[in-house]
Length: 228
Image 1 (cartoon, helix red, strand yellow):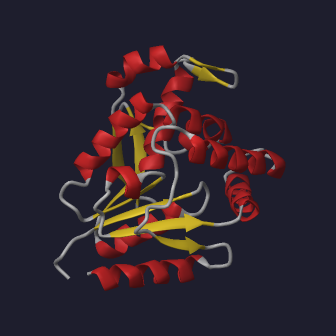
Image 2 (cartoon, one colour):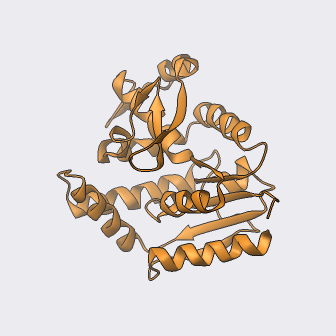
């Protein structure tokens, strides 16, 4: 069990990629990287500097300031998870809002942004022993990952999960808005020119529409153990 591998988990929004990736990393004592949080943090930065809004995107200004963005993960001792830090500030809560969700696919579709973050992600995973989730981990970031998972679920199922999660956090949102966000993000993620969301040829697809979190975790853990 001393052998370490790279685990790439891709899939549509709100399929629970981050949740299972975190649990897997804890179980294996691997590094966990939420690549989606990195794109969300850049989106939040763009929002804070008025580079992006509902009807505009000042890509030129964002591109000029990309090098001033410092992204890092730090362990939250209360939750046991790694929180996202943007320029030394914990933004874990801020990046999970619907406002950021509505804009993140626009930012993530940009080649300049993706080039910067992919370089960071590759550096993090160069020594293996990493679990990373996102949209292009198995197809771009870690093409040679020993285990690639592609997660899916119906748009309705994912919207219900996301709605429940935000309501429990005290956010005032409507199911209709959440469902629209899920569908819109699916379209943008799968049709963007740079690194679109696709299932890698050697990825194992898991539809978790009718799986409990425990069932899903045990299934993926068994796949990891086969590789090890």
